[in-house]
Length: 186
Image (cartoon, rainbow, N blue to C red; front, side, top):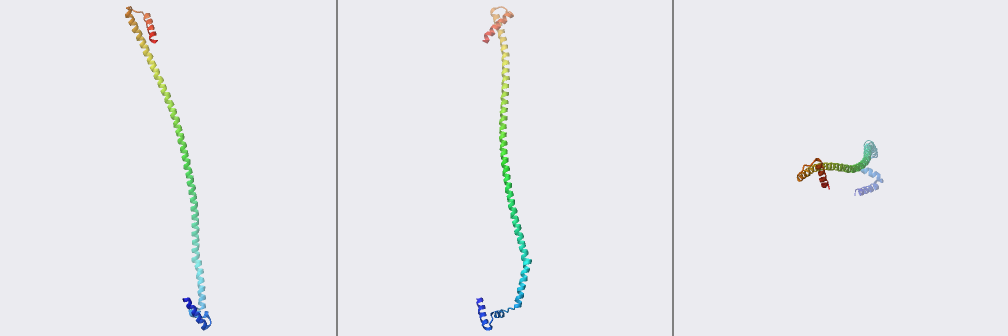
């Protein structure tokens, strides 16, 4: 609507004075020299603002943008380093696990070998003890056998002397003992 009013006003003033620009300048009280000064003033303010306000703000924003880009680049680099570190850590853990498994296997093998060696030593010691026991038993048996032979010979000689009623000589006792022992051994 206001635009329509301006057009109507312009049409009326054109018809009356003959110049639309003159009629608008008179109606709105526009002075050319003031308009020019205001335009120059506006341009000066724009240049001052550009140099002292807009320029530093743009520079500050550019510096921030650059710092953000640098920070993102550093972040990406740190993430890569972390990923590489995690990979190295996983490899080290895997290597340690493999080494531990190998050590456990070696320990098992060593324990089996030591167990076998100890079992063999124990078996050898048991055999030695058994051999000593058998030898001691044999020695004891031989002693008892000798004592039994001696006692048996004495009993045979004593019985023979009583049955025959005569006193046996050492030679007779020896012969009777040998005959009796020969019969007992067979």
